Length: 78
Image 1: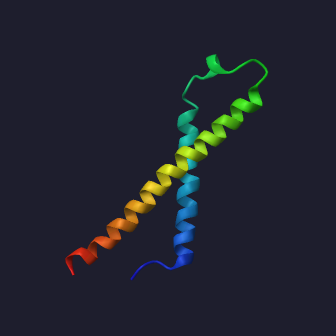
Image 2: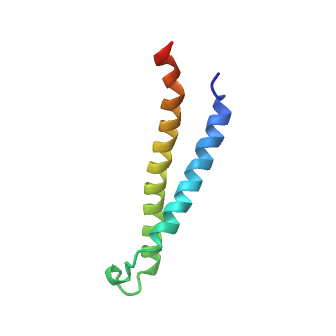
């Protein structure tokens, strides 16, 4: 018995938010100050946000796919 569509949506939203937050936290450890032009702080912040979304969404999709595939393994042995 699988999850309902609403439950899948909530899990997907929470996974994306969680991994985007983790990616944002991890990206802050990088010292990119040397590559940012002076007076372009907003653009640097925007880059951090977009890079966090890209990385976090990719990682969340990986884990969501992995859980979906692992739940389908039961059909291999039936």
